[in-house]
Amino acid sequence: MPLHRLRRHRRWRPGRARRGRPGVTVHQPGTLREALDWIAAKPEAVPVAGATDLLVHWPARVAEYDRDYVDLSRIAELKAIAFRDGELVLGALATYWDVIHAGRMKEGFPLLVAAARQVGAVQIQARGTWAGNIVNASPAADGVPVLMAYDAVVVLASRAGQEDVPLDRFYTGYKQMRRRPDQLVVAIRIPRRAHDVAIFEKVGGRRAQAIAKVGLAIAHSAAGWRVVAASVAPTVRRCTAIERLLTDGTPVRGPDDLLPAIERDVTPIDDLRSTAAYRKTVMARLLYDDLRGVCPAFS
Image (cartoon, rainbow, N blue to C red; front, side):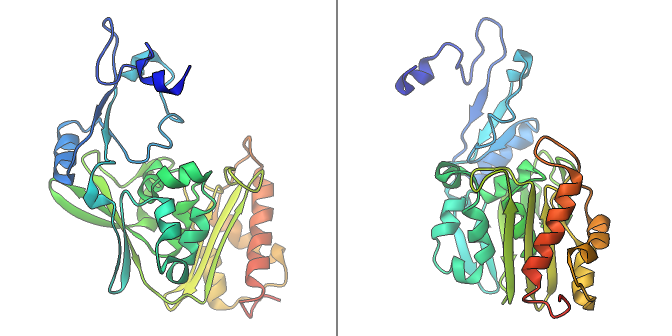
């Protein structure tokens, strides 16, 4: 079918039902206040920004097509990227492409740029948002590990007010998070710190456009060590046992010395992409190889 005729296709009926069947309703607010009013009135509505994951999670049964979506893409106040005193603020509609091309980003927040370049193809980088990566809550997310390594804070808003939640406390389980149905992610706040270590790793089935089998973000600053892993637990998570090992200066003479701490931090599974044993082994090797040159305890 020619692309210019797609919207006329008989199966595409946004906003209305056909012959008694349920339909999809898309609301496009122009302001944040209007969006918050809408989701307060319809808490079952699904907020979308870049919508790059929408079809991935599209319901398989016709009865589930009766959905309300709130398209946030027209809200100008959510698009800003601001360098303020002591922090970087990413608006909820800031895309990977925006970060790649923002001035001062590569020098101040190199992990964000490194992760953004690994997210899908250019089309996904241009549409996908950092806030969307957070609320999609995939254990294999590319953006979340680097945000968490930078101690990012998720800014939630509702008609009742604003709430700030540290990203490393945002997830409560697989695809579960500390966001009420009447709340929207409106910004991500990241403290500005000098980092002497900033490393991002992604291991997939190919060099590009792959879902991570193992993901790692490692950062060190005056605030201490941050080690964050993806694809090895029900959520992206900080590896506090590894962080303590690095802080204490425990001698590490090879990747196997890291396995006890890794097993305390993560719970990988066997799935279509990989095995639990492979993920732990690769994670240990990545950590050892990356830190051997920067951590005196590694030999």
